[in-house]
View 1 (tube, rainbow, N blue to C red):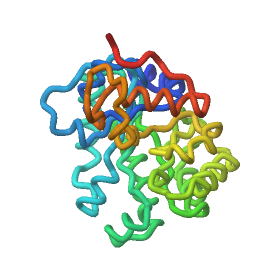
View 2 (view 1 turned 90 degrees about the horizontal axis):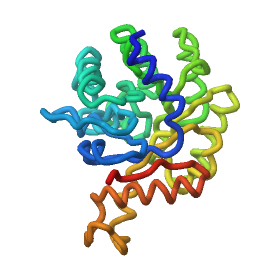
View 3 (view 1 turned 90 degrees about the vertical axis):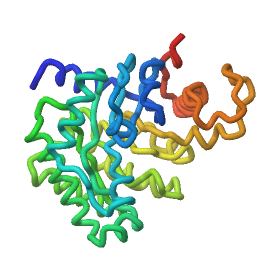
Length: 269
């Protein structure tokens, strides 16, 4: 493993708390908060920002499956993209794999089974690690029912992956669940099964207080909707803060405080 990858993986252990979802990758040059950026926002950019904060990469799997019913890039192509982000943006703590979501509408979109989505998710993580052991890819546990998630844990074990030994383990297909209790059931079952260092992808504001003590981190871009009309005191004087850096950081501060997660400093001067 390269020195850069070792630093990134070590930092992933400290990338705890709330990761602010950034719709504008250029904001990586302007914030001192932990950030979360989607590959869909980066892939077509010729010029990449230079990060001043540690950040994590979302592979954009939900969008890929929703739009195309499949992944339209290969694992080797994704590795090349992530390597470019490591070299040109810098400070990448971890990257999600090319996982396959298991929400009912995603299953209907592909026509495959939940088990097949899980199999492909696990296989992709293994392939990425084989292609680029120096890059900080993390596994994602996918499923829909509690039993699904526990089966996915076993799939990783059967493939020789010790989830407990890894700095970050993503939990997918939880962001669009209406019931906070449903999120709690999944996270608590995984926690009881010995899965630690969990990152909850897009856990809702209503569910996060129930599961925050079992997670090391979560991310959200829900601040954009919340900021639609809450613009009082905007330092930039905006009428609509749906695409406002300050609104993003304020939301992260509020939600982080609610669940006891400390934040960093916010927008740079």
